[in-house]
Amino acid sequence: MHYLPLIPRLQRLYASPSSAKHMRWHAENHHDIGMMCHPSDGGAWKHFDKTYPDFASEPRILRLGLCSDGFSPFGMSSKSYSCWPIIVTVYNLSPSMCMTTPYMFLSSIIPGKNNPKAQIDVYLQPLIDELKSLWEIGVVTYDVSLKQNFVMKASLMWTISDFPAYGMLSGWQTTGKLSCPYCMKSSQAFWLKNGGKHSWFDCHCQFLSMNHPFRKNKNDFLKGRVEKSYPPCLLCGEEVLERVSYIPKITEQPNLKMPGYGATHNWTKRSVFWDLSYWKDNLIRHNLDVMHIEKNVFDNVFFTIMDIKRTNKNKDGVKSRMDLREHCLRPELELSVDNGGKVLKPKASFTCNDDQRRAVCEWLHNIRMPDGYAGNLSSCVDLKEYGSYY
Image (cartoon, rainbow, N blue to C red):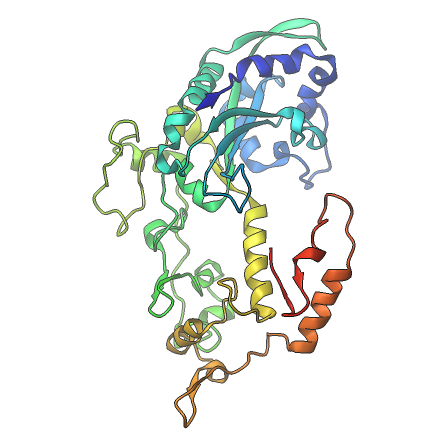
Protein backbone atom coordinates (compact mmCIF):
# COMPACT_ATOMS: atom_id res chain seq x y z
CA MET A 1 0.00 0.00 0.00
CA HIS A 2 1.14 3.55 -0.74
CA TYR A 3 -0.23 6.37 1.45
CA LEU A 4 0.23 10.06 0.75
CA PRO A 5 -0.47 12.33 3.78
CA LEU A 6 -3.43 14.61 3.15
CA ILE A 7 -3.06 17.45 5.66
CA PRO A 8 0.09 19.11 4.20
CA ARG A 9 -1.51 19.26 0.76
CA LEU A 10 -4.69 20.78 2.15
CA GLN A 11 -2.61 23.43 3.91
CA ARG A 12 -0.90 24.31 0.65
CA LEU A 13 -4.28 25.29 -0.79
CA TYR A 14 -4.23 28.25 1.60
CA ALA A 15 -0.53 28.94 1.05
CA SER A 16 -0.96 29.47 -2.69
CA PRO A 17 -2.41 32.84 -3.85
CA SER A 18 -3.96 31.13 -6.87
CA SER A 19 -6.18 28.90 -4.73
CA ALA A 20 -6.48 30.52 -1.28
CA LYS A 21 -9.01 33.16 -2.34
CA HIS A 22 -11.20 30.51 -3.95
CA MET A 23 -11.45 28.37 -0.81
CA ARG A 24 -14.35 30.54 0.43
CA TRP A 25 -16.26 30.35 -2.85
CA HIS A 26 -19.05 28.16 -1.43
CA ALA A 27 -19.93 30.81 1.18
CA GLU A 28 -19.33 34.03 -0.75
CA ASN A 29 -20.96 33.21 -4.07
CA HIS A 30 -24.74 33.05 -3.93
CA HIS A 31 -27.02 31.64 -6.58
CA ASP A 32 -30.64 31.92 -7.55
CA ILE A 33 -33.04 30.29 -5.13
CA GLY A 34 -34.07 26.86 -6.36
CA MET A 35 -31.01 26.46 -8.58
CA MET A 36 -28.43 23.87 -7.59
CA CYS A 37 -25.01 24.29 -9.18
CA HIS A 38 -22.77 23.31 -6.25
CA PRO A 39 -23.00 20.82 -3.34
CA SER A 40 -23.43 23.78 -0.97
CA ASP A 41 -26.86 24.35 -2.56
CA GLY A 42 -28.02 20.85 -1.60
CA GLY A 43 -29.94 19.68 1.42
CA ALA A 44 -27.13 17.50 2.78
CA TRP A 45 -24.74 20.45 3.07
CA LYS A 46 -27.37 22.72 4.64
CA HIS A 47 -28.44 20.02 7.09
CA PHE A 48 -24.85 19.58 8.24
CA ASP A 49 -24.51 23.35 8.72
CA LYS A 50 -27.61 23.39 10.94
CA THR A 51 -26.36 20.43 12.95
CA TYR A 52 -22.91 21.96 13.50
CA PRO A 53 -23.35 25.77 13.37
CA ASP A 54 -19.94 26.46 14.94
CA PHE A 55 -18.29 24.38 12.26
CA ALA A 56 -20.25 26.14 9.51
CA SER A 57 -19.44 29.62 10.83
CA GLU A 58 -15.88 29.42 9.46
CA PRO A 59 -16.09 29.33 5.63
CA ARG A 60 -12.47 28.19 5.33
CA ILE A 61 -13.20 24.87 7.03
CA LEU A 62 -12.96 22.11 4.44
CA ARG A 63 -15.76 19.96 3.04
CA LEU A 64 -14.37 16.80 1.49
CA GLY A 65 -15.57 13.93 -0.65
CA LEU A 66 -13.95 10.53 -1.11
CA CYS A 67 -14.12 8.43 -4.24
CA SER A 68 -12.66 5.06 -5.17
CA ASP A 69 -12.83 2.55 -7.97
CA GLY A 70 -10.71 -0.28 -9.27
CA PHE A 71 -8.98 -0.39 -12.63
CA SER A 72 -6.44 -2.47 -14.49
CA PRO A 73 -3.22 -0.44 -14.89
CA PHE A 74 -2.00 -2.68 -17.71
CA GLY A 75 -5.07 -2.50 -19.95
CA MET A 76 -8.09 -4.71 -20.42
CA SER A 77 -6.19 -7.35 -22.40
CA SER A 78 -3.60 -7.99 -19.70
CA LYS A 79 -3.67 -10.53 -16.91
CA SER A 80 -6.26 -9.69 -14.28
CA TYR A 81 -4.83 -7.19 -11.81
CA SER A 82 -6.78 -4.72 -9.69
CA CYS A 83 -5.44 -1.37 -8.51
CA TRP A 84 -7.60 0.82 -6.25
CA PRO A 85 -6.86 4.55 -5.83
CA ILE A 86 -8.48 6.54 -3.02
CA ILE A 87 -9.07 10.15 -4.10
CA VAL A 88 -10.18 13.07 -1.91
CA THR A 89 -11.98 16.05 -3.44
CA VAL A 90 -12.30 19.54 -1.89
CA TYR A 91 -15.79 21.05 -2.30
CA ASN A 92 -14.96 24.52 -0.99
CA LEU A 93 -13.90 25.45 -4.50
CA SER A 94 -16.13 26.46 -7.39
CA PRO A 95 -17.58 23.78 -9.70
CA SER A 96 -15.05 24.72 -12.37
CA MET A 97 -12.16 23.98 -9.99
CA CYS A 98 -13.14 21.30 -7.48
CA MET A 99 -13.37 18.50 -10.07
CA THR A 100 -10.12 19.32 -11.86
CA THR A 101 -6.90 17.34 -11.49
CA PRO A 102 -4.92 19.84 -9.32
CA TYR A 103 -7.58 19.71 -6.60
CA MET A 104 -8.26 15.97 -6.55
CA PHE A 105 -5.81 14.51 -4.05
CA LEU A 106 -4.65 10.92 -4.32
CA SER A 107 -4.40 9.72 -0.73
CA SER A 108 -3.90 5.97 -1.12
CA ILE A 109 -3.08 3.40 -3.77
CA ILE A 110 -4.15 -0.13 -2.98
CA PRO A 111 -2.21 -2.47 -5.25
CA GLY A 112 -2.81 -6.15 -5.48
CA LYS A 113 -3.89 -8.90 -7.73
CA ASN A 114 -7.36 -9.12 -6.18
CA ASN A 115 -10.16 -6.78 -5.21
CA PRO A 116 -9.72 -5.65 -1.55
CA LYS A 117 -13.48 -6.05 -0.94
CA ALA A 118 -14.35 -5.58 2.74
CA GLN A 119 -10.65 -5.36 3.61
CA ILE A 120 -10.57 -1.88 2.07
CA ASP A 121 -11.19 -0.53 5.59
CA VAL A 122 -7.67 -1.62 6.57
CA TYR A 123 -6.19 0.54 3.81
CA LEU A 124 -8.48 3.46 4.68
CA GLN A 125 -7.39 3.60 8.32
CA PRO A 126 -4.51 6.13 7.87
CA LEU A 127 -6.86 8.49 6.03
CA ILE A 128 -9.56 8.08 8.67
CA ASP A 129 -7.01 8.94 11.37
CA GLU A 130 -6.18 12.18 9.55
CA LEU A 131 -9.85 13.01 9.09
CA LYS A 132 -10.52 12.44 12.80
CA SER A 133 -7.65 14.75 13.68
CA LEU A 134 -8.93 17.42 11.29
CA TRP A 135 -12.38 17.26 12.88
CA GLU A 136 -11.47 17.04 16.55
CA ILE A 137 -8.31 19.15 16.76
CA GLY A 138 -7.59 20.84 13.46
CA VAL A 139 -4.27 22.25 12.35
CA VAL A 140 -3.02 25.85 12.41
CA THR A 141 -2.80 27.08 8.82
CA TYR A 142 -1.77 30.36 7.23
CA ASP A 143 -4.26 31.90 4.79
CA VAL A 144 -2.23 33.94 2.34
CA SER A 145 -5.32 35.64 0.88
CA LEU A 146 -6.36 37.15 4.23
CA LYS A 147 -2.84 37.31 5.73
CA GLN A 148 -3.83 35.48 8.91
CA ASN A 149 -3.61 32.14 10.69
CA PHE A 150 -6.66 30.04 11.45
CA VAL A 151 -7.42 26.53 12.68
CA MET A 152 -8.16 24.45 9.61
CA LYS A 153 -10.69 21.70 10.23
CA ALA A 154 -12.48 19.38 7.82
CA SER A 155 -15.40 17.01 7.49
CA LEU A 156 -16.00 14.17 5.06
CA MET A 157 -19.40 14.76 3.46
CA TRP A 158 -19.79 11.48 1.53
CA THR A 159 -18.18 8.84 -0.62
CA ILE A 160 -18.64 8.36 -4.36
CA SER A 161 -18.35 4.95 -6.02
CA ASP A 162 -20.07 2.45 -8.27
CA PHE A 163 -22.55 0.00 -6.76
CA PRO A 164 -20.13 -2.87 -5.96
CA ALA A 165 -17.71 -0.44 -4.28
CA TYR A 166 -20.72 1.01 -2.41
CA GLY A 167 -20.94 -2.31 -0.59
CA MET A 168 -17.22 -2.30 0.17
CA LEU A 169 -17.31 1.19 1.67
CA SER A 170 -20.66 1.08 3.48
CA GLY A 171 -20.53 -2.48 4.84
CA TRP A 172 -23.91 -3.41 3.28
CA GLN A 173 -23.27 -6.11 0.68
CA THR A 174 -24.79 -5.06 -2.66
CA THR A 175 -25.53 -8.54 -4.01
CA GLY A 176 -28.45 -10.90 -3.52
CA LYS A 177 -32.09 -10.24 -2.72
CA LEU A 178 -31.29 -7.65 -0.03
CA SER A 179 -28.75 -5.75 -2.11
CA CYS A 180 -30.73 -2.49 -2.03
CA PRO A 181 -29.30 -0.48 0.90
CA TYR A 182 -32.54 1.50 1.26
CA CYS A 183 -35.17 -1.24 1.00
CA MET A 184 -33.02 -3.56 3.14
CA LYS A 185 -35.14 -6.44 4.46
CA SER A 186 -38.27 -4.90 2.90
CA SER A 187 -36.95 -5.74 -0.56
CA GLN A 188 -39.57 -7.16 -2.95
CA ALA A 189 -37.01 -8.74 -5.27
CA PHE A 190 -37.89 -12.20 -6.58
CA TRP A 191 -35.88 -15.05 -8.06
CA LEU A 192 -35.84 -15.73 -11.79
CA LYS A 193 -35.83 -19.50 -12.08
CA ASN A 194 -34.47 -19.60 -15.62
CA GLY A 195 -32.26 -16.53 -15.46
CA GLY A 196 -30.71 -17.69 -12.19
CA LYS A 197 -30.69 -14.26 -10.54
CA HIS A 198 -32.85 -11.84 -8.60
CA SER A 199 -35.08 -9.30 -10.29
CA TRP A 200 -36.47 -6.00 -9.01
CA PHE A 201 -39.04 -5.70 -11.78
CA ASP A 202 -42.18 -3.83 -10.66
CA CYS A 203 -40.64 -2.92 -7.28
CA HIS A 204 -40.95 0.76 -8.22
CA CYS A 205 -44.74 0.70 -7.80
CA GLN A 206 -44.50 0.79 -4.01
CA PHE A 207 -42.94 4.26 -4.27
CA LEU A 208 -45.90 5.67 -6.20
CA SER A 209 -48.82 7.48 -4.59
CA MET A 210 -51.51 5.17 -3.24
CA ASN A 211 -54.03 6.25 -5.90
CA HIS A 212 -51.65 5.87 -8.83
CA PRO A 213 -53.17 3.71 -11.62
CA PHE A 214 -49.98 1.64 -11.95
CA ARG A 215 -50.62 0.13 -8.52
CA LYS A 216 -53.77 -1.60 -9.76
CA ASN A 217 -52.48 -2.49 -13.21
CA LYS A 218 -52.55 -6.30 -13.35
CA ASN A 219 -51.59 -6.67 -17.00
CA ASP A 220 -48.62 -4.44 -17.82
CA PHE A 221 -46.34 -5.32 -14.90
CA LEU A 222 -46.33 -8.50 -12.81
CA LYS A 223 -49.43 -10.40 -13.86
CA GLY A 224 -52.33 -10.40 -11.46
CA ARG A 225 -50.57 -8.26 -8.89
CA VAL A 226 -52.02 -5.23 -7.09
CA GLU A 227 -49.45 -3.18 -5.18
CA LYS A 228 -50.77 -2.22 -1.74
CA SER A 229 -47.55 -1.77 0.22
CA TYR A 230 -45.99 1.51 1.28
CA PRO A 231 -42.39 2.41 0.46
CA PRO A 232 -39.77 1.26 2.99
CA CYS A 233 -39.01 3.65 5.82
CA LEU A 234 -35.79 5.57 5.25
CA LEU A 235 -33.48 5.15 8.23
CA CYS A 236 -31.70 8.18 9.64
CA GLY A 237 -28.01 8.07 10.48
CA GLU A 238 -28.56 7.35 14.17
CA GLU A 239 -30.83 4.39 13.34
CA VAL A 240 -28.25 2.94 10.96
CA LEU A 241 -25.53 3.43 13.57
CA GLU A 242 -27.66 1.61 16.12
CA ARG A 243 -28.00 -1.35 13.76
CA VAL A 244 -24.29 -1.63 13.04
CA SER A 245 -23.11 -0.89 16.59
CA TYR A 246 -23.07 -4.61 17.50
CA ILE A 247 -21.28 -5.61 14.28
CA PRO A 248 -17.48 -5.86 14.60
CA LYS A 249 -15.13 -3.99 12.32
CA ILE A 250 -13.28 -5.94 9.67
CA THR A 251 -10.05 -5.51 11.63
CA GLU A 252 -11.60 -7.14 14.71
CA GLN A 253 -13.20 -10.27 13.22
CA PRO A 254 -12.41 -10.42 9.49
CA ASN A 255 -14.11 -13.76 8.76
CA LEU A 256 -17.21 -13.40 10.91
CA LYS A 257 -20.56 -13.89 9.17
CA MET A 258 -23.35 -12.30 11.15
CA PRO A 259 -26.46 -14.40 11.95
CA GLY A 260 -29.33 -13.63 9.58
CA TYR A 261 -27.05 -12.52 6.75
CA GLY A 262 -28.91 -12.69 3.45
CA ALA A 263 -32.27 -13.26 5.17
CA THR A 264 -32.83 -10.23 7.42
CA HIS A 265 -29.80 -8.09 6.59
CA ASN A 266 -26.74 -7.79 4.35
CA TRP A 267 -24.28 -6.30 6.84
CA THR A 268 -20.76 -7.68 6.51
CA LYS A 269 -18.94 -5.25 8.82
CA ARG A 270 -19.15 -1.97 10.69
CA SER A 271 -17.64 0.45 8.22
CA VAL A 272 -14.55 2.36 9.26
CA PHE A 273 -16.37 5.60 8.43
CA TRP A 274 -18.47 5.19 11.58
CA ASP A 275 -15.28 6.04 13.50
CA LEU A 276 -15.98 9.63 12.44
CA SER A 277 -18.21 11.03 15.18
CA TYR A 278 -20.19 13.16 12.72
CA TRP A 279 -20.78 10.42 10.15
CA LYS A 280 -24.25 9.67 11.51
CA ASP A 281 -25.27 13.30 10.87
CA ASN A 282 -24.56 13.20 7.14
CA LEU A 283 -27.79 12.94 5.16
CA ILE A 284 -26.03 11.31 2.22
CA ARG A 285 -23.19 9.09 3.35
CA HIS A 286 -22.58 7.18 0.13
CA ASN A 287 -23.22 8.44 -3.41
CA LEU A 288 -23.36 6.37 -6.58
CA ASP A 289 -21.21 7.30 -9.55
CA VAL A 290 -23.84 8.02 -12.20
CA MET A 291 -21.33 7.49 -15.01
CA HIS A 292 -21.12 3.76 -14.28
CA ILE A 293 -24.89 3.38 -14.05
CA GLU A 294 -25.50 5.30 -17.27
CA LYS A 295 -22.90 3.21 -19.10
CA ASN A 296 -24.34 -0.11 -17.92
CA VAL A 297 -27.95 0.87 -18.60
CA PHE A 298 -27.07 2.18 -22.06
CA ASP A 299 -25.18 -1.00 -22.93
CA ASN A 300 -28.10 -3.21 -21.95
CA VAL A 301 -30.71 -1.09 -23.74
CA PHE A 302 -28.60 -0.57 -26.88
CA PHE A 303 -27.56 -4.20 -27.32
CA THR A 304 -31.14 -5.36 -26.67
CA ILE A 305 -32.72 -2.96 -29.17
CA MET A 306 -30.06 -3.74 -31.77
CA ASP A 307 -30.72 -7.46 -31.13
CA ILE A 308 -27.00 -8.22 -31.11
CA LYS A 309 -26.30 -11.91 -30.61
CA ARG A 310 -23.48 -13.63 -28.71
CA THR A 311 -23.30 -11.09 -25.91
CA ASN A 312 -24.59 -11.06 -22.34
CA LYS A 313 -25.57 -7.41 -22.79
CA ASN A 314 -28.58 -8.42 -24.88
CA LYS A 315 -31.26 -8.98 -22.24
CA ASP A 316 -33.86 -10.39 -24.64
CA GLY A 317 -32.62 -13.98 -24.60
CA VAL A 318 -34.34 -17.35 -24.43
CA LYS A 319 -34.08 -17.52 -20.64
CA SER A 320 -35.61 -14.04 -20.38
CA ARG A 321 -38.57 -15.14 -22.51
CA MET A 322 -39.06 -18.21 -20.32
CA ASP A 323 -39.14 -16.09 -17.17
CA LEU A 324 -41.39 -13.57 -18.90
CA ARG A 325 -44.02 -16.26 -19.50
CA GLU A 326 -44.04 -17.08 -15.80
CA HIS A 327 -44.25 -13.54 -14.43
CA CYS A 328 -45.86 -11.34 -17.10
CA LEU A 329 -48.73 -11.26 -19.58
CA ARG A 330 -46.92 -10.92 -22.91
CA PRO A 331 -48.35 -13.71 -25.12
CA GLU A 332 -46.88 -12.14 -28.26
CA LEU A 333 -43.36 -12.59 -26.83
CA GLU A 334 -43.69 -16.11 -25.44
CA LEU A 335 -41.64 -18.94 -26.89
CA SER A 336 -43.36 -21.57 -29.00
CA VAL A 337 -42.41 -24.94 -30.50
CA ASP A 338 -43.06 -25.87 -34.13
CA ASN A 339 -43.99 -29.30 -35.45
CA GLY A 340 -40.34 -30.23 -35.76
CA GLY A 341 -39.66 -29.51 -32.10
CA LYS A 342 -37.72 -26.32 -32.81
CA VAL A 343 -38.11 -23.50 -30.29
CA LEU A 344 -39.34 -20.31 -31.95
CA LYS A 345 -38.59 -16.91 -30.44
CA PRO A 346 -40.96 -14.23 -31.76
CA LYS A 347 -39.27 -10.99 -32.78
CA ALA A 348 -40.00 -8.20 -30.33
CA SER A 349 -41.45 -4.94 -31.60
CA PHE A 350 -38.71 -2.98 -29.81
CA THR A 351 -35.83 -4.60 -31.73
CA CYS A 352 -34.35 -3.31 -35.00
CA ASN A 353 -34.45 -5.15 -38.30
CA ASP A 354 -31.40 -5.53 -40.56
CA ASP A 355 -31.95 -2.26 -42.41
CA GLN A 356 -32.37 -0.30 -39.19
CA ARG A 357 -29.27 -1.86 -37.65
CA ARG A 358 -27.27 -1.08 -40.77
CA ALA A 359 -28.39 2.57 -40.68
CA VAL A 360 -27.42 2.93 -37.01
CA CYS A 361 -24.02 1.29 -37.49
CA GLU A 362 -23.19 3.35 -40.57
CA TRP A 363 -24.10 6.53 -38.71
CA LEU A 364 -21.87 5.53 -35.78
CA HIS A 365 -19.05 4.59 -38.15
CA ASN A 366 -19.14 7.91 -39.99
CA ILE A 367 -19.68 10.24 -37.05
CA ARG A 368 -16.73 12.42 -36.04
CA MET A 369 -16.26 13.50 -32.43
CA PRO A 370 -13.86 16.05 -30.90
CA ASP A 371 -10.46 14.72 -29.86
CA GLY A 372 -10.60 13.02 -26.49
CA TYR A 373 -14.39 12.80 -26.50
CA ALA A 374 -15.02 9.55 -28.36
CA GLY A 375 -12.15 9.34 -30.80
CA ASN A 376 -12.26 5.58 -31.25
CA LEU A 377 -16.01 5.23 -31.71
CA SER A 378 -15.85 4.38 -35.43
CA SER A 379 -13.43 1.53 -34.80
CA CYS A 380 -15.94 -0.07 -32.40
CA VAL A 381 -18.52 -0.66 -35.12
CA ASP A 382 -18.77 -3.95 -37.01
CA LEU A 383 -20.39 -3.16 -40.36
CA LYS A 384 -20.42 -6.82 -41.42
CA GLU A 385 -22.40 -8.03 -38.42
CA TYR A 386 -24.21 -4.69 -37.97
CA GLY A 387 -23.19 -4.55 -34.35
CA SER A 388 -21.17 -2.50 -31.93
CA TYR A 389 -18.60 -3.61 -29.41
CA TYR A 390 -16.58 -1.75 -26.78
